[in-house]
Length: 203
Image (cartoon, rainbow, N blue to C red; front, side, top):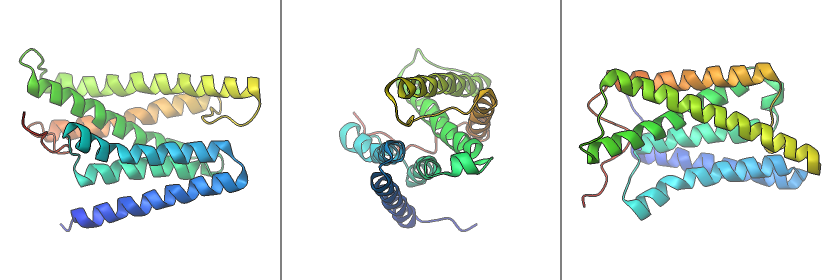
């Protein structure tokens, strides 16, 4: 099976970053704080892998960086209108974002587990850990959306993060778990290798 080379993956990341910069520009042109902030935060997230490698010696594989960039790009583009006009778009964005959260939690735990003799979990419990971690983060995110929407109503203006009713919250949480299950299932298939993070620098 043909796979994308690291060079092409990095090129796609750069292309998506330019796209997010353009979306931020559209937000400025329209005078939309919502679009501008969402696109700017999404773009900033894609810079984190380079910061982790430079400051902490943790290098993400190019495939994971591309995956991360696609997820936040979908979110940034959604702020232009698809979140409101495409019924399934929000669910897709949440599933992608949750998969990134799941990988971050999983990779962090596996790093701690690797460097500590006191921390170890059987495979089935790692599966549960990923699901619970994403569920907790999802609830926290919904609370953040509620808080920002309430704040925007108090001060006036559009909410940076918005909720669209109880059904929206339930669907968000369900599709968060879809993304978590994908990552947790991947761990069960490949339990011997993290596969998404390169080895940290040796101390």
